[in-house]
Structures are given as structure tokens and as C-alpha cells.
Length: 88
Image 1 (cartoon, rainbow, N blue to C red):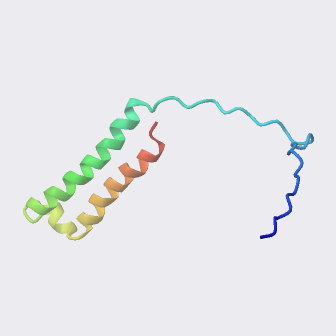
Image 2: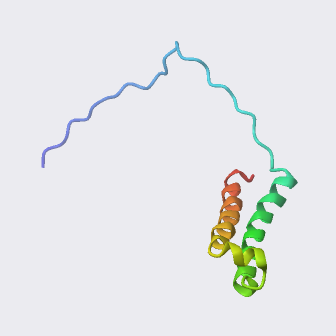
């Protein structure tokens, strides 16, 4: 079996004409209000769907909304879940 030829590579040296990187300030933990809103949206969305299933036809404004109740409940929960991406 023939041996492959070994290539010698020179060490990488960054160009000197580039700017120096800017140091980013470390982000601290999330605010308590942010956490309350995030978990609150998820819980309100879940409660909206549960109430819709249990007593949606007995509550006048929920009965008027019809299947839009599903969109409202899921939108609230998704908004809370999207907030988790910025939670530290």
C-alpha cells in the first residue's frame, strides 16, 4: 500500500489590519418580572384551554368565540414558550 504524502501547513496568523474584537458584557440573570410574565402566559393559556373544554359553552363570550378559543389559548402558551429563549 503506498503512503500518502504529508503536506506541511504553516501556522495561521490573523491579519493585522483587522479590528480587535469587542468584549461583550456578560448578561446577568433575568428580571423577576420577566419570569412572572413568562410563566403567567403559559399558565393563562393552559387555563384558557381547560376552561374552554369544561365550561366553554356556558360562558357567553367564550361561546361567541367558538374555535377561536383554541387559537387564543395556544397563542398565549406559545408566547410564553418563546420568552424562554431569552430567559437567563
